[in-house]
Amino acid sequence: MSTESETETGTADRGTTAPSSSINLESVRAVAKKDFQDSVRSWLFWGLSLFFFTLLVATTGVVSYFGEDIAAQGATTDVLVGFVSEITRLIIPLIALILGWKAIAGERESGSIKILLSLPHSRKDVLLGKLIGRSAVLSLSLTIGFVLAAAVVAVLLGGFDVGDYVGLLAVSILYGIAYTSIAVSLSSLTRSTTIAGAAMFGVFILFYVVWNALTSVASLLAERGIPFFETISYTTEMQGQEVELERLPDWVYFVVNLDPGEAYGRTLTLVTDTDMIELQAQLNEEMFGGDLPFFLQDWFALLILVFWIVVPIAVALYRFDRVDL
Image (cartoon, rainbow, N blue to C red; front, side, top):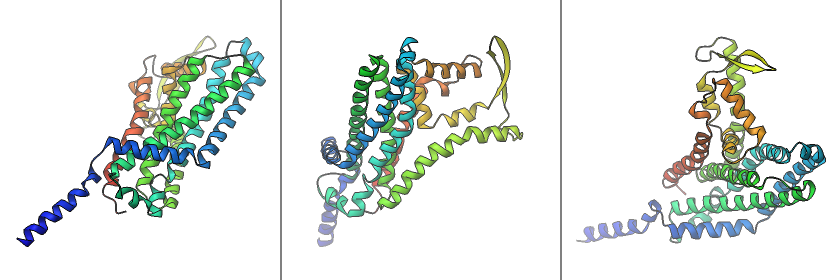
């Protein structure tokens, strides 16, 4: 009887720790709210907001310097969105990776994660709450930077297309959440902030050095006649004459466009009418005979951004339940 009683007690005890495998939306909201409040009160949030705002204002300063010529051509919004999108493509990942760096690893290193889990929060609740909280902080930081920069542009240039600018902000936030998901997920899988920091640096190098070099490497291999890298010929019109050019195989462009930064640039064509961005889309169409393959279309780029949000956190949710804290 005693053995049976002990077995029942052990089962009951394990039942009390069962929340580690469940998700409670109210608990997720509580973790997210606290994480957001703590982050907003930190110097890191205000420092990143100021840094991002300064970069945007510097960009608008450049635009305003040439403002008369640009405005005369009716291209104020085009240039603004073009410049800002290039800056945000580089800066937003840095901000997101810094925000997500210590999200879980910092609490594991200090031991405070055990205190947090002693409350009625499962590991999944904590992980999702941290992602939502850090994503909200990033979104607020970007919104502050964009709104303040917009005010500067309106004063210096007299106006711009608000719809395109809001579209740029919306896609930028989605792009930031993708990197936040990657950062928080990696942070949950590391025991120390040092290792987590190295992982964040590795992610940045992967997407901004290794991935960006894929096209160049593939071109070199194609020149050497390596199998699977054979180029494909196509014709385009330049200065009124047809010119024959070469492009890499389809699969190379598919791999290259899995990069969140590439997906960010292509998704912008869904929400903006910027000539600079649409020109690149037109050049891509010419490369493929006027009919873009699915992996170069705008809707697929949006799916790639969603992929980088969902998949990393899904892997982390599975793995974090099984790590030894």
